[in-house]
Every structure is written in structure tokens, then in C-alpha cells.
Image (cartoon, rainbow, N blue to C red; front, side):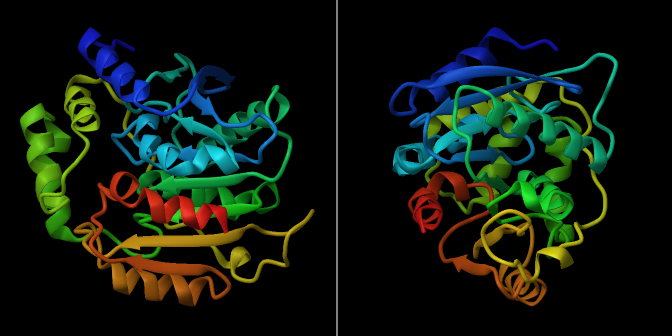
Length: 290
């Protein structure tokens, strides 16, 4: 998969802003090589982070700076087929939820079997990454200690038609100008990290693979986790941004509370969907530390 030199330069610049040493790791999976950027104490519990669609692992830099790597060893993942440094296999594409689960199985196997931590796993995802994480938790509940869903799309509510219509030109023919305009609209003019924004604009020419879509995950098995320990389901946290344009966050939060009565569900004021990992890092890290 071709990457322009300007994309790689923007990626390296964004990653270079993370505090402390970052170890890039290429993990082999049946679906290709997955790039994971790792930081934090080797003996700390693992925190696996999945970005939203169209984003890379570098979006988690604000959370690392806010202290995520003090309490966990962070494993920030580039989605296979999305912008980033993961490389899809030539002979085995990810085409279904089952494939996504198999891919993430391989990622977690590598995280736990490597030189890093060997403890309970926290899986966190934003937007489309949260959709993947929710499906994984529903099908592999005993592999996780915690599940953190950050403004998940297509999990508790569908996408607003107006959001889809506004995003469509950028999705059909992405250009730096269209990406910048869309993000300014969706985040309501939030002050976005210019280094991250440059990387998003550079992703316009990145040859991505069509993402897997499908039904909402069946979270019935996570509604009443039996507590920590072997055989238990994960504790669940859900954070929504009240200013999100992709869905009605208050309505989605009500649905989440009904579906997962044991979960902690909050709506953060003043936070938009695409800006959430960047502008709400303190709230996210504070939740992870609880």
C-alpha cells in the first residue's frame, strides 16, 4: 500500500509529539501486519486503543500526554486498511465482523505474549473503533477487564442523515480542503491540534480499504457483568460528546443506560465527536484511572 512521503512525514511528526519514548511494533496477524505504537511501563496493565475511521493511532497522543501511560502500558493501533502504517495481507482481507474479531484476537495475543504486560486488558475505541471494540467485547467478553466506548457510532444510535450527507463528498472524493471543512463543521470550530489536522489532510490521498459495516453489536451479555476475574465480562464505560453532530448524544446515552444498566455512561458538555480524543483527554484518562 503506497504512502506518500508527506503522509509519512506528517505521521512521524504527530507521533513525535507524544511524551516519553514510543516503541513502534509491527505485529503479524492473519490479515496483515498491524502497526502498534507502544509506550508506558512494561509491567503495567495493557490498554489497547482503536482510533475512529479515517484516523490513525496518533490521535491518542493527547491521552498519553494526559497520563494514560502512567497507569497503563499503551498499545495504540493503526486499523488494517485505514490510514496509518498497518499493511493489509494481499490474500486475506477483513470483510466481516468475524474477521475483525479474528484480527483483534491476534493483536491481543501478540500484546499479551510479548515482552510487555500479562494482566487484564482494557480495550478502548473511538467512533468506528468503538463499534469494533463493542463487537469484540460482545463476542469475547472474558478476554477483557474493561471496555471503554468513546462516542461510539452505530452502537446505541444510528447516524443522522444530515451528518452523512455532509460527510459524503469527503468520503467519495477526499481532498485536504474537504477534510478540513468537514472537521471544522463537525467540531463547531474547535481548536484542533494543527499537527493532527495536517495528518488528517494528508490522509486524503491514502488508498484505504472499504471498512466493514453491519448491524449493531448484541450487548445483552454485557448488561450484568459478574465482576472482575476469570469468566467475568468487562466493566463498561461509555462517554458521549454532547456537541456531536453524528447522532443525538443524549438519546444515545439513554439507550446505552437501558442496554447496559451496570455501565457508567456520561455525556461530556462542550465536546464534539471528531474532537473527543483530542479535547477531552483529561476526562478520558481520569475515567481510565478509576
